Structures are given as structure tokens and as C-alpha cells.
Length: 242
Image (tube, rainbow, N blue to C red; front, side):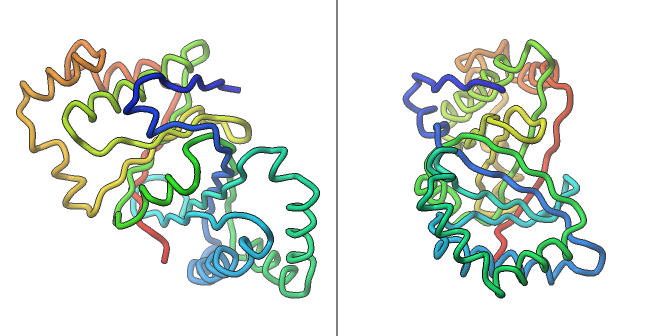
């Protein structure tokens, strides 16, 4: 398990937290994409909150990784999520004919499912970051043995780099359990055009100075240093699932 130490830097305190999430990635069965959309929307809108849990955030793949959907389920903590009151409320809702039918539909319409448990900022703050954004840059990283803490610090450094350029900061998720990812970051952009233009508003000198203040040897070091810490990583451009 990668143990995250919360940053002292005041800006980075907006991007990390100790709230537990279940990050689930799904790929639709062939020909059943729209059926899976309908089942996920029904779960999110009509089943989760009545069962005592906070409504999940839903992302739809646009390009990049193999999954079609990412669902970020707020848990708070293991103890809270599995408490008697929340478990009983959840079971009462799902152990009904409708709940049983919905479980069956979700299973039938899904060809691939991956679950990852990670910690980040509280759901209210996370929802605020998603609000009004039309595109999300999702980056998932598996670090090399012995270098996972350094990988997390590199992601913080990149946020410091963005902060010095007054750019949107990424939200960081750090591994608790489940799949093999150590860190995930989500960047928020109003549109694909805004995402493409994000780094073009600054001169090479401005970017280099910001990178050095953030702890890199220069702007040309940002990408190569990250890759020196990785076993592998996946990038995805995603949009809201509505």
C-alpha cells in the first residue's frame, strides 16, 4: 500500500485528501454500450443515495485507455462504508426485485471491470472541481519498486509548476487497495480546445522558470523525470456521462 503524506504546501492542500473512494472502470459488452449507460445512470440517480451512500461521479471515455466508463463511488472510510447502518440501508435497497434485476443488467452489459480504492479530497470539493467542466485528463501511474513515494512527490511538483503559471491544478488520488495503480491525477478543462491551449499561453522562459521553482531542473525535465519513476501508465481523455 502506498501511504500518502498530506502536503504542507497550501496550494496542494486543495488537491489531496484522506477521503476513500472506489474508482471502478468498466468496458461495455459488445453491442451493449447504451444498455450499460442506462444501467449506470439508474444506479447513480436512483439507487445509491437512497441506499445511504453519496452519489458517484461518472466519466465517459473519449480516447486513450480501454475502459468505457469510470465511476467514482464515495465511501468516506472503510469503517463508515461498512457500518451496520449503511450496510443495512444498502442491502434493503439492492435485495429487492428491482435491485436484483439491476445487478443482473450491470453484470450482463459489462465485459471488463476493474476496481481501485484510493484516497483524495472530500466529495463536495471533488464535485465542485467537476462542475462546469467538459473534459477531464485522467492519468494513472504504476510506480517502480522503491520509487512510489517519489512518484507521488513528482505529481505534487507538477501541481506546483501549474500553480506558478496560474493553471488549473490536478486532483490527486493515492492508492489504498485494489488494482495496481499507485497514483491517479485528474485534470479539469472546459473543453478540448481549452485543454489543447493550456500550455501555449506561456513562453518557454516562463515555463522553464516555473518548473525550476517547482523543483525540476527545467521544463524539459518534467516528462522524462516522471517516466524514470514508472513501471507503466495510462492516459485517458474523458467527458461527463450525462
